[in-house]
Image (cartoon, rainbow, N blue to C red; front, side, top):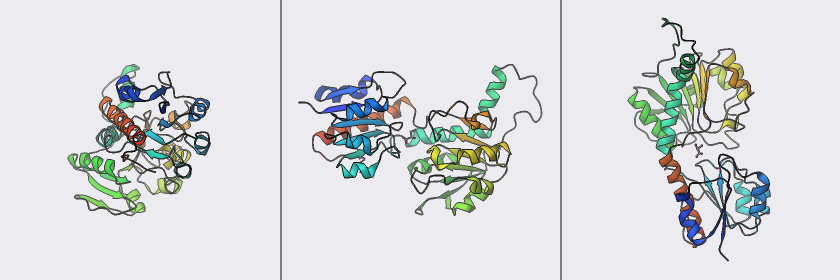
Length: 316
Ligand code: DGY
């Protein structure tokens, strides 16, 4: 009997072709929707590998339902959707997809920072809706990016790639990280100092019990009135209602959000009523090339696991 791989979303043929030659590959067939929870639990009963997405909750219920499971390979660098303790208890390997998404995620981070600072999306909507009546001296004015101070929370590979881009914009770059890094042209700052002096606070840290809610009312109150908060990491790091209040009362100037506590963000979410928020649907790594490279890492990990070879990008 061939080992069974269950993939929770429809992937391009080229990403699964090699696995299909050797294993029984079962893939959720619908475009643009993930496999429902019940389907994941049902397939877990037989699967030897689960190829999951950041939108799948892979918790102890899944591991308990899956007696044959050897590996969970997650199409993301983040793996907060997977209960690693449960994986460890059940002897299941977990892998992620680091490195290949560094540059594209840094590009998107910078694009979101620029779009927020210069009100790009709001301005575009003004043109399309016919509300552009005249060039006006203070119309659609944003905030300077060149020469401004950037504070990066979470200085891993993506943080470094964002810092490289910021250098080209002549920005002053600070970072806060659990461990200090030896980096050129980038200065370590204590968390509170970074919040107080940055014009752009960019969140790039993983979501963990320690970082959950790390940006709340108190932290937002420390930021400059002219500052922007940019979150491309995970929604749960920011207290969204505290952010809503801070933006509504113009205690900070703007926010750019690629991630939300609940995704897709509900259409009636208070944050979506504010003009000073730029929102995106979690597209940090979304380029054709990057996503195919991420998928190649998942397929490689599953294959290596089935062949009892050393598995790259293990997080458990
Ligand atoms: C990840 O891979 O964790 C990113 O959030 C994807 O954009």
